[in-house]
Image 1: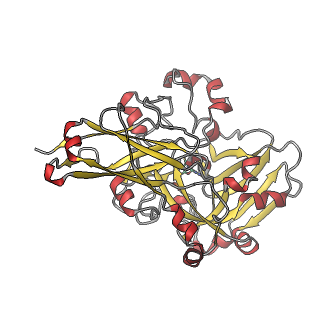
Image 2 (image 1 turned 90 degrees about the horizontal axis):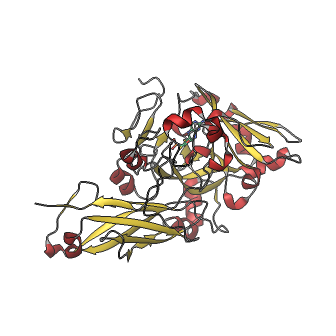
Image 3 (image 1 turned 180 degrees about the horizontal axis):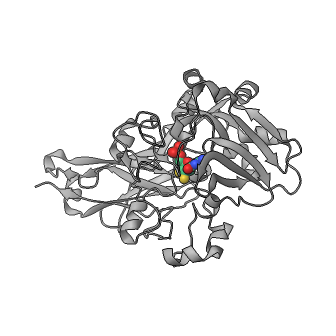
Length: 402
Ligand code: MTE
C-alpha cells in the first residue's frame, strides 16, 4: 500500500518521482497504441501531494462553493450538480506543461523532473460548463478572474490557480466541471469526485478534487499559481529565481494556452530500424496537438535537419465524435457538446511513409507541427528555469540494424 494512493496500478507507466507525490507517464508506444482515448490505467498523472481520500458512499455529498465577487454565493453538492444541470461530454486532451522536459534537462537541469513525451492523454470528459454555475452566482462589477482550489493539502497550502473570468464565460473555451472520464467516475488520481477541465490550456489549470471557485479582481495568489506553471525569461537560473520574487509574481510569465507540439512514436528512440531495401518504406508515426482550441493543420517531417520537408497525413479522431453524435451519446451519457463548436481540444495522429533508401542515408528524423494560426514548432529549444512548454522539432536518431 502506498501512502498517497489506494487504487491498483497498471505496471506499465513509468514513475517520474517517488511514490509521494505520484507522477507517472505511460511508455510512449503504449500510449499511442491505445489510440485516441487513453484509459485511466495509462493516463498520465501529475500530483503535487497526497490524493484526497473520498469514500464512495459520501461522493454525492461532495460539496463545492462559488464565492468571492458574486451576488449570490452558492454551495452545492455533486448530487445537485448532476441533478440540476444538463451534462455534456467532450473529448479533451490534457497535457502537462512539463511534457518533453527531459530534453531540456539534458541540455541544462531545470527545476522540474524529466517528463518524456507521454505527459499527454485524452479522455471524454462529462460534466457541466463552468459558465452556467458562474452565471447563476452572478459576478459583480470588477470581477475578472476565477480562482479554483482543490482539496489536496500541500506544503504550501491547498493547490490552486486561476483563469480569466471571460474565458470561463466563453462557450468556445469549453471550461467545465467534470465528474466522469470515458463514461466512468473519475479515478482518485484524476480528481475523484470532481475536477475542473480547461481545454486547450496546460494541465496545471485543470484543478482536481475541486472544493472552491472564487471570483476575484486579481489572478490567484495561491503559491502553486505563482511558483509553478511559468516560463521565466531564459537567463534566469535556478539560483537567481529562488531569491527573486519579482520574477515569479509577474503574471505575464504564467502559461495558459498550450504550445503547438508533436512527437514521433515510431520509430522509437533506440529502435533498430530494418533498412532492408526490399521493404521499400517505413511508416513513421506520432501525435500532435495545438493550444487554445487551435487545430493542427500541418505536420512535416525532415530527414536532412530541416533543409527539406515532407508533409505527413493527419487523422483527426475527434471528428469521428462529431459525425456520430447520437451513437456516442448513448455510449458515454451526456450530450456531446461538439456540434456547433469548431475549436479543437484533442490531439491528432499523423503518419508518413518514408523511403527506406532515404532513411538509410539520414542520421535522424525530425518532425514539426503547425496550427491553424500558423504557429509552427521552432527549431531551437527555449530553456527556462521550470523546464516548461518544450516544443522544438522532435528528433529521433535513426538506429540502423547491423
Ligand atoms: N489539481 C490539484 N488539486 N492538485 C494537483 O497537484 N496538478 C495539476 C492539475 N490539477 C494538480 C491539479 C497539474 S500540474 C496537471 S498537469 C494536471 O492536474 C494533471 O492531471 P491528471 O493527473 O489527471 O493527468
